[in-house]
Amino acid sequence: MTLISRIGCFFTLVGMVLVAIFIASDLSQQRDYNYLLVGGLAFFIGYAVYRSGKPPAQPSGRFSALRKVSEQFQSRRKKPGSK
Image (tube, rainbow, N blue to C red; front, side):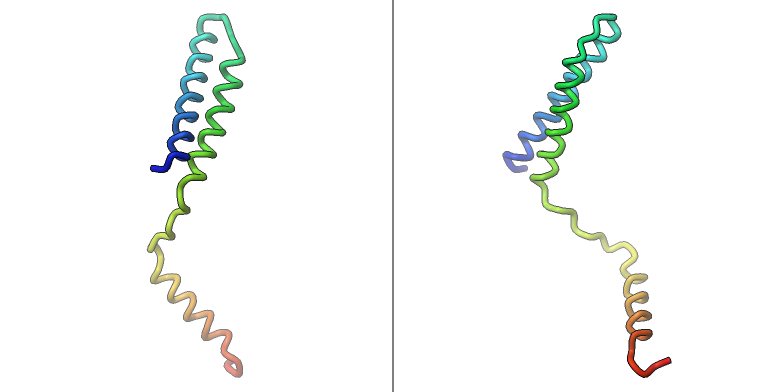
């Protein structure tokens, strides 16, 4: 795990805690929307930073046989002079 993804994970957790504090303040009838605003912002920024530090996922091998058959079928259709 890189430093950037760790920082993103930290902000995501801080955002979740702040949203939980907002829910607690809402249940106590003393709403403080700053917790919701800052918590939501920290969560989304943290998640974006967390995902930016990871390499893109490798394509899975699912349906590889079907993909090969489809490519063979399309290559046969594109041959010049064949009907």
